[in-house]
Length: 92
Image (cartoon, rainbow, N blue to C red):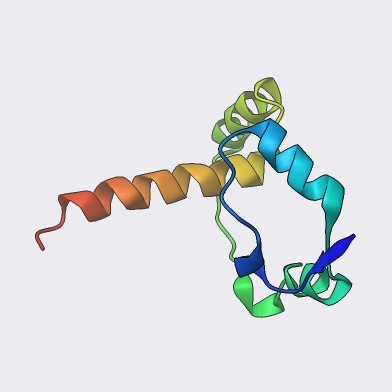
C-alpha cells in the first residue's frame, strides 16, 4: 500500500468507483492526517451579552427547537446571513 504524504498526490476523481479503487491501494500518512485537524483557538470566539425581552427569547428558542438547533447557533447563523446581505448592499 502506498502512503500519501502530500495532498497534491491525491488526484481528482471522475466518479466514486475511481476514488474507491485509488483508496484500496493508498493510505494517508498519519502526520498529514494530523495536520489537517483543526485546533480551535480560544481567540476565535468572543463572548458577548445581549439582553432580550423574555417573550422574544422564548420564541427564538422554540424556533430553534423546531429546527433541531441550539438557539445560540441559530442566532449566529442569522447574524452571519444578515451581515452578508448588508455587505452586498454597500457600494464598492
